[in-house]
Image (cartoon, rainbow, N blue to C red; front, side, top):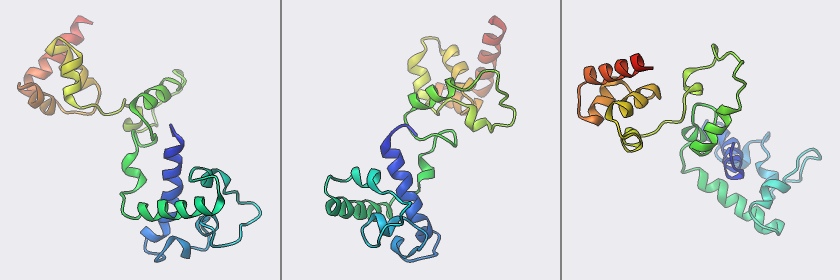
Length: 175
């Protein structure tokens, strides 16, 4: 996770899970959750700390607890955290994902890693059109990203998938 805001989203997602699964009507009804304690509705367990989460909502405990309850309540209307994942494992900006991928040991085998975790973040095909002056190079880079088919790249560039394939093959031969 790149930022504390993503961690807050994860904390909200976790306390809303039992409700989304239809196991309880409200987050406060799940006995094994930290929600009631964090929200100020139950005495804290000695091993549970709420200071970090509440510190994101205010300096005074009562105000922070109220804002936390509102934050969780607002999350009921939002899609789940999984919709924000990139490459199945990251939450953050595209630059953050690329930085994390660069930290992977190059000697480490990625054979067992799903392709979606190894790929760079998804970029719109228009990104490649703008970034590369050469149409063939732009189509090649778009294909190498692993996120688009030859037909999708062809549609974006106004050519057939066969033209895209030839451009990719031609650049491979040059390398």
